[in-house]
Length: 415
Image 1: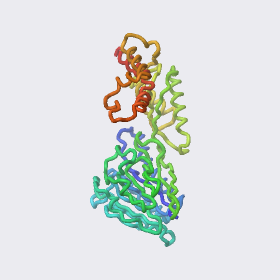
Image 2: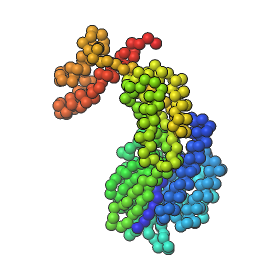
Image 3: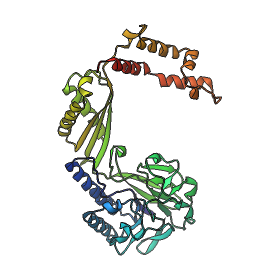
Image 4: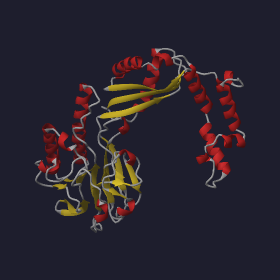
């Protein structure tokens, strides 16, 4: 059996320029702390290898202090018998003038793969080969070749892992990343027992057999990287399906609380209680020492819309929440608050809102009315089943009467 820890996109020394000094300092520390936890994980699980699939740091932003932590921790792993294979990515490319090539890496059991040409590395335990890693790296920040296409057939008979920083077409969240080392599932040879990928920061498995996995990053860096972040522990044995475990490591967790159902709040105490309840529900299953950065998105009907729609009021609310909840930072946003609307009182009235509500009501039951308000692009010109199309359109119209009422009334209010 071959046991590996798969990590990627650690991005040590991300600058965090949009945050105040205290939060920025904590986030910089959190990146280093997450890396230390990664090494701890490899040692605790007695991993044969730690695989890092690129973007370990952001090239010139890497500080000397963090470089020291990086080398010391990797040496701790290799000295304990863990083989480390690190394939460069677009943020830490491997040509001679880039930072990765100038670091004094550990002398033993450490392999820096910084070339497009795939390299085969034996993973040994007590002098016996227990598996293989075949890896390729980025030489420049804008690699446009399909590096996976050059990988050889997997070595055998021991399990083999492909290690690469790549942009796989069809993966979730690829639109948030540049298309560097673009490839496809067809290029990722299924003779490999596992593909350990980096570049896309959302953890995901793209293929069940000969799994192709993105581990995600070990520490989130913004609200688009919310939720638990960490690494994968993978056990590979000939003749058996890989066992994959996701392990949370991030000291700081980014989370967005999307709050509706504010119709009953009447004062600040109610608002705080609603937000606290949502936060408490989200904390279940988090790491025991987890720190948080929160975004609170307020939307829907709310009697306190006048106060909560005011940016200064929301800033004050965020400051109070930061102290009351004991979190690193809070942002509160108005994402469509409106005052509660008694829709029934506006039905059958001659004004625009009354006419809009009448049209929506007819569309719910009258096929001709529905077809009349359907854009040409959705009108079934592709020959699709008309009943299915109309059912889909009516699903889209659900609750639209409340949204239309809120918008029309808000637009009619004096500035």
